[in-house]
Amino acid sequence: MSAIEKLKCLIIGSGPAGFTAAIYASRANMSPVLYQGLQPGGQLTTTTDVDNFPGYSKGVNGTQMMVDLEEQAKRFGTDVRSGMITKVDFNGPVHKVWVDDKLEIHADTIIISTGASARYLGLDSEQHYLSNGGGVSACAVCDGFFYKGQETVIVGAGDSACEEASYLANICTKVTMLVRKGEFRASKIMADRVRGIENIEILHNTELDEVLGDGNVVTGVRVVNNQTKEKHEIPCTGAFIAIGHTPNTKVFSPWLTMDESGYIVNNPGSSKTNIEGVFVSGDAADHVYRQAVTAAGTGCMAALDAERYLAAKGLH
Image 1 (spheres, helix red, strand yellow):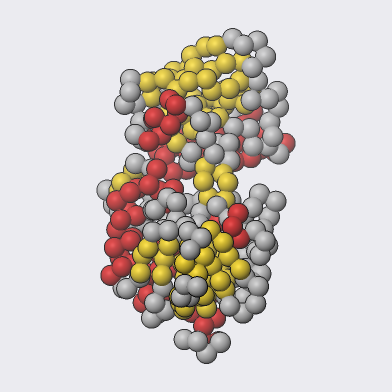
Image 2 (cartoon, rainbow, N blue to C red):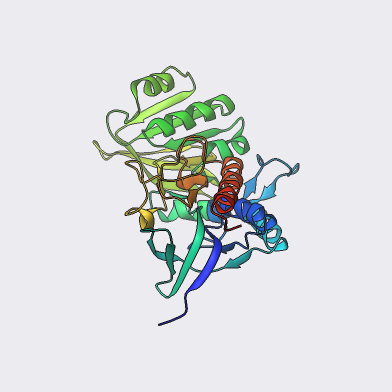
């Protein structure tokens, strides 16, 4: 039997929430260990330019921003490791987790910052322009500014797609919504809102067939009517995919209270979960805002909550 590692604070996830929690926990002498997970740096590593995080007056590359956060966490002593948490056992006062099905860790406190993954359509052209930052995005609030005064397309039919379309309509000359079915999935009030905006065109029974471009930037999309099978092209410079997110929380599902979509439920006004000593921050619990700055804020909250928990238990 391999030795069990005992920790005061374990942070799971390496986005803005995880690294902010690490900065605060390190400075509070909690000796945190942070596991980066499947996507070191989190969702921001799929974003080329971040213009809306305070303090970066000229903007910053998403990957570079996560490198900066990691270096700041390490400066205060965070032990950053690669590895996936593959199993947990929150039954009883000792919080047990297993890394890559091998190392067993017992942690006094755990901060979950595993984030969420945007859903994509899976088209090769979509993934190409997503990875090179040339015009495909899953976050209109994050990236819409770059398409100011231009024409954009948004794929989706739910409340968040309607919200993003409304946001884009304020800054783009035209927004075309591609709705797969004959009606919206969104609430009536949201659907009515987008129908009432002049520069939003709604195409029902329509799917994205191909993202078009010159290899570097998007110049349009080809769409298909799934009833008539007719295809046509729409000129645009940006294509936004708003078909939802999947929280990366499955490993915790037997233990933590979650909503119907798998987001971890925290106590209002705190980062506490239904398990004492287990805290949540970032997009693993947030399906509303999903911004780097809000994730960082809840990372701070989780570290402070964990520190107070340890102090109350006489462990700190």
